[in-house]
Length: 228
Ligand code: NI
Ligand code: MN
Image (cartoon, rainbow, N blue to C red):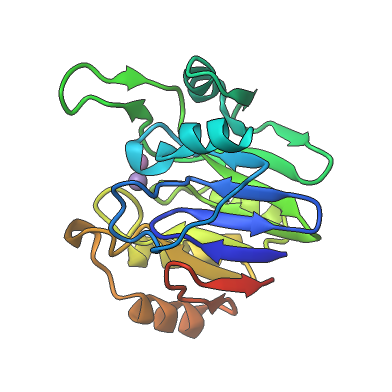
């Protein structure tokens, strides 16, 4: 399974059978790679904030991708003319080429609101994704919560994608506690250094995680790919 970091919280997962984009925020993203060639079969969107919905609807229109999200956000996308698969927290579904379960996230989920009323789009979520023989946990935007221990106890997580930017999500100190509960083999930090407000030093995070847990931290630059 090939994993590509596309800046902020955006990732591409590719197996022999399927290509999945997560939170594809490219337009207006100062951390997005220069050349983006993304043609996903499915797009997973964790919540309604613009730095996560991003280009999802346009990509889905261009490549006939199916958007997978919580019911309210899926319907918001469906109203814009794309195909969707609505789910909700705690539910999983086997798409054949991959399986996904929606996990809790402690955050908000609205669209707009900076220049008028926001449209509220249900609960935010994270994703547990079984793809190509690997289990990937994308936490979405979230603060630390104790049920991450349950995710760690019930699953063998190969890669955890965790926000470390602070201010809007967990910072590095709480993300270390998340790693202790999730017990993943690898950790990839996300949702940092996109803007000055969420500036963090990923090498300091790597050092602390590798000092206090058995997980390896992979610091990826936008555009980087790895085989997992
Ligand atoms: Ni958010
Ligand atoms: Mn965000």
